Image 1 (cartoon, rainbow, N blue to C red):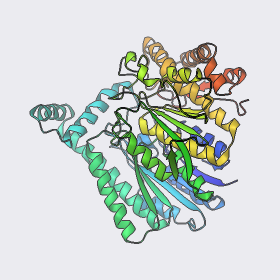
Image 2 (image 1 turned 45 degrees about the vertical axis):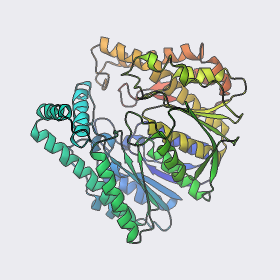
Image 3 (image 1 turned 120 degrees about the horizontal axis):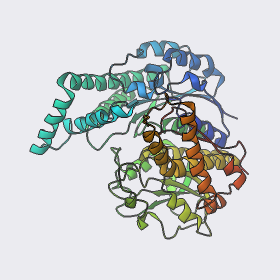
Image 4 (image 1 turned 90 degrees about the vertical axis):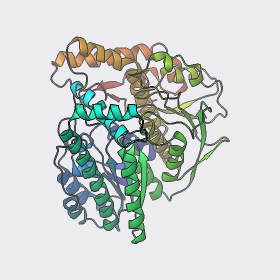
Length: 501
């Protein structure tokens, strides 16, 4: 059994629980710091301690994967804070240099921050949106009088000092990514991935990415054996690099997936989401290259069905439900082939449309092997591609069903139905939906009770055929437990029993 070390971005389920589930599916032993040692919403990790964890454990593993943001800033939230201090790349590199990287395959990743600032309370959300719009207009292509007027208004809202500080923040983070790339090359790491986090089709991240790509070409010209990749997202990176490392340890075999994209018009090559700078088609190509996967249209061992919604992509919390829940174009009339289905639901951000899995479950020849529909387009696509790769490597059906059950509970049920009920309850209690850590224990318990009730209503009603077509027992579904690891409504952790039969 291959042994892989992972120091992820922070302690959220997408970076910890997801990676552990993929390791179980692929037959990998995962070595990871205690969750309490990773960054949270209000406090970052001790990056030097995490670097020492790598130095102490890497050579007992076949591969090591780590997040530069965790080591430099303490986590993703902290990397988005302009005023926050950080460790120098040189200090991290000095610790990592004690590892003999010729004996262990090294993989690392770093993020270019999203356009908005970090949000840890509801009060900060409007500022986040102001900053996002400011950056899009400041380095956008719209030179109209209306755009100039709006940019001036935003600059007045922010103030010149704040705008200058924001520009310095982006320069700081971009410089750190460039220095981390140089360090990865000098250390002898196998691969470094740069994630362009939750952005847009215009803004400073496009220029920053071009500069970093030029830097990677310069490093290649200097003879580094390290390879580099660039992709929109952030929360999918731990899973992506875990699957890449496991695949390369297993011999780097090209695997085949049957791929279907629905709807076919306007087409995967043209579709852009709200928070990405690349099209869906470009993303699928990039994922195939990163994970040594070839897409085919005839029957294969697994069938990847990507449902990408309508243009522009709706956001669950910003768009009326009839834009996606009552849209018949999101429900395929038929699915060609009989291979087990893995569904990636991009119909809207932050959750999965429950009607899709219910619709497919009514097709007599279709079996559901997996589903991912959380967060933004490329977060969901990246986790999906990584899971499919690990399925092909490991063939652990029980582990696959466990992860599927947790995604049904979280992506399909909580995010699309339960989350709004929890938000309404917290607002009635005059509590912050983005930070209810100060709530009374009974109020916190009621949030969990709401999530649990919504889940039970689904598995005892419309979800029955979905569970049947997923080969998940009613008993296993009833055993799912919920928690709010960051005590905010964005993240819930659905925990299924270890063995799903």
